[in-house]
Image 1 (cartoon, rainbow, N blue to C red):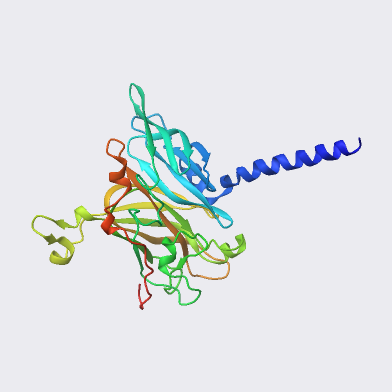
Image 2 (cartoon, rainbow, N blue to C red; image 1 turned 90 degrees about the vertical axis):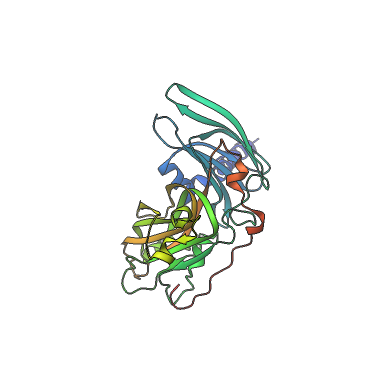
Length: 326
């Protein structure tokens, strides 16, 4: 029975490989970025090559918030196709049935924890970011400048493909250059994920080009732009720049994704401004691969109020043609 040791050896070799394949999403920039910023509460495999990752803020204070991200295998990596942030709650005991996501929502108080059950049904309460009916469908992109070579267009930061990217085209390293995602209608945004650098290819290609060290995430808020009752737009009619938030961002010098809390309703535009870069080994253009907004949901409201927009406004995103300055 000499073949028995050989069979056992083959089985032992196969089992770790299968386990590794099941957990390879943990090596992705998206999962690594969530784990770096938050406490991961669960990671549940779906039926269509997806993983639902639940996460929460750290600490022992009241009203801890958190959310979940649906990571889908895209070519050689896992990338968020949908994400949400619960205002004042975080998810636990996440389970998946088809594309429906069920969980216990936990609300922390000074006297303890309260929980409530929630199920988000695909097509009713949420859809993927790139699907018609998403709060972010129909979004356009713009940029202060774009590199002339390489096809690094601004629309690449919102195409759901981490292998594509925008590159600024200004003289020097790109300080103060920007790229923006402009929503078709005001959206409720919880957190924003940023993928810095040119992610396609190997580590060496990523290091050949500039990537973000520090930046600013600037928000244009609809309700702060004017007086609706009097139909006055502060910026267009009065020449005043009023409203909006700025979030300071810092990135590690490695291929990763980072998430930044926004927690604002009525966001018209998310703009990423370059303020400091890691210099490339060969080139001085600064790349940004992807900008990923997560929907802000208040569990005390109906989930569809936050997760699904008016049907008439839902239309697929269209690329923006480059005409000189973008």
